[in-house]
Amino acid sequence: MQSDPFRIRDHVADFDKIVQDIVQRSEAVRATVPMTADVAYGPDQTDTIDLFFPSGKRSGLPVHMFIHGGYWRMFSKRDYSYVAATITRAGAIAVIVDYALMPKVRMATIVDQVRRAKQWVLDNIADYGGNPADLTVSGHSAGAHLSTFLFNSDHTPSNVRAALLLGGLYDLKPLQNSFLATEIAITDEEVARFTPLAHRHDPQTRAMVLVGANETPPFHQQADRFNEHLLQQGLPVISLVLSNRNHMDSVRDLGMPQSQAGDCLTKLIANDDR
Image 1 (cartoon, rainbow, N blue to C red):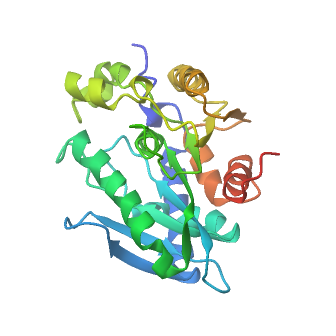
Image 2: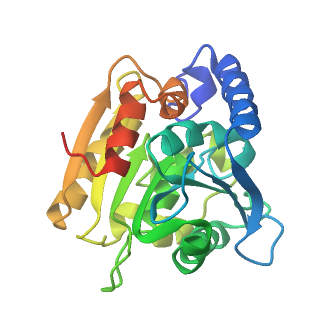
């Protein structure tokens, strides 16, 4: 029987070890990096963000939002605090976003949540020393999918300067025939409404589309298609295959500034195209 290319555990031998490592790294970051936890961006108990701050004066700092993955059905912002290590080292405020999980809620709810989180940042981050005019975003896997909804365009500026999309899902149709069919049962309506390849995106947002070299074929195919989709819409895009990286160690690398993925994130925040 052919393995499911979307079931990450089947293709990453040390899946559980990596998850344990990122959770431990997250706890260490929460214990050492200045932070404000569980800031509400809405009324639901999952409408919360964690803010992490670089050392020094808090005034006019760049701001970076990170949205975690987990196929919209697992993990939380707390598990991904470790990404703030790279963000704050780059001199930015890290905004790690939480959201409700499927199947308890549907995708429309989650997309609305991350959009409201962005609006909260634009409206309030100046009170925490951030510059809302210097907002960048990133996400991994389902989080990369959700991040695209922060800069898809209804002919108004998204106010997102740049976005890093790692191991993302940009066409939801194939997931209906994956193991997720029994776990979250993505509907035809959700495919139509929430497939990023069906949307227009803000041409003022600079995009970085990353995928690990050791990812399964669908992730490479979707990255290639979305890269071309954005280019056709006039967005400046950098496309990169991360050397010797799979779906899990690539996202762990976001919390390591000296890694290839961590370096990409640092350069995105610094507005460095080199």
